[in-house]
Image 1 (cartoon, rainbow, N blue to C red):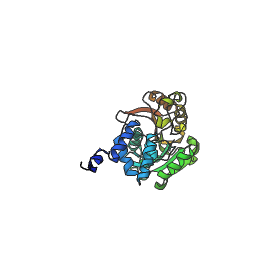
Image 2: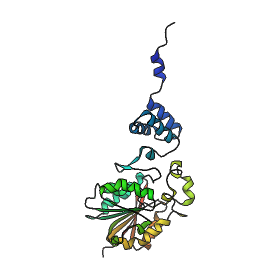
Image 3: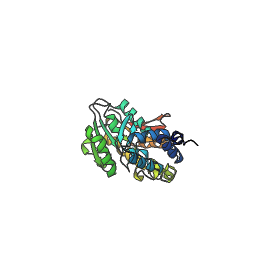
Image 4: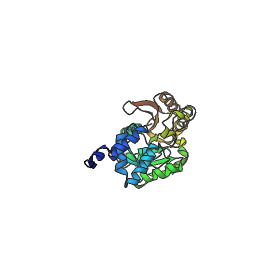
Length: 271
């Protein structure tokens, strides 16, 4: 009787990548192959890789595990417990680039990681950037991303966090404030509702609590000819636009079907 060929067993043993893909698929990861590639690339040791895969299988957001998210072709550092930037928010970046004048003053409220402002530093040379968030963890994360690029980071509740000297000087005011209605939080994907901070998701009864507050005071912060940009949902856009109009700005709605993104833009006259 001949000895068993060890190569036969080896051929039946799945390679690490295939094994990880199988585990991720079983856990419900839609992009299992891409995630496996990323985890393998980011892990420094086999033990670390196993820990990372196990956390992903348990439902932790991939961005928390690897420590970053890709946003507008830029790596943005993401700390656990901070809102993860979504690709749909790239519409805010694109519209800001179109609207910003030369050497603009840019403010990002509810900044989270400051992904939007961080990306804009690459394309708006000469701009001044000011970002704010009420969550101390988000402020620390924003400082990691934007601080080294010369941005100014503040902790506080919307406009209360900003220096008074900015009133009447802001060329573009960006807000990706939470807009999920409170009753619909339970319908969000588990990795969002179980791991991201509620304060970054919950927009109140109709999802527009912060939109009301932002739109009502934007006019006094904008420079002549300035613009307010608020991310919202398609079904909420008309109401957000009404709030912007009530605040003294001329509203319009922008939608990008590819990104599944909606932004309401409110413009202040130049006179």
